Length: 125
Image (cartoon, rainbow, N blue to C red; front, side):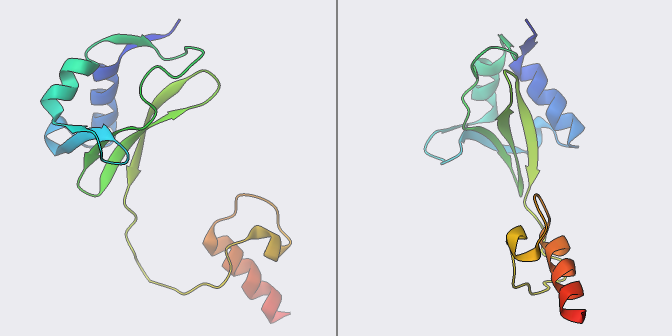
C-alpha cells in the first residue's frame, strides 16, 4: 500500500508548479457542472488514500483550476496522481497543413513541428 494524504499531495503539486492555494479559482469536475471553493475542497481532501489501489479512488474528472492552468487526475497501472496543465501560449503562429504521422512515412508520437519539418524535407527533394 502507498498511502498518501490527498490534500498534502495537492499542496505539494501546487508548490512544484510554482502555485499556491491562493492561485486556485475553483475545484470541481472537468465539465464544470460541480464546483466548490478551495476551503471546501480542503475539508474533503484532508484524508489518506491508497494511490496504488487497483482502482482509481479519487474522482477521475476532478480538476483544480487557476488562471490559464489546472491540475487534473492521471492514472496508469494501478497508480494515480496530479498532472499540471497550462494553457499553451501562441508564439509565432506558423501555419501547418499536416497532423498525421502516417502522411510522413514516420511512426508514432511526433509533434506538429517534427511532422512539418519532415514534410519540408520531402518537398525539397
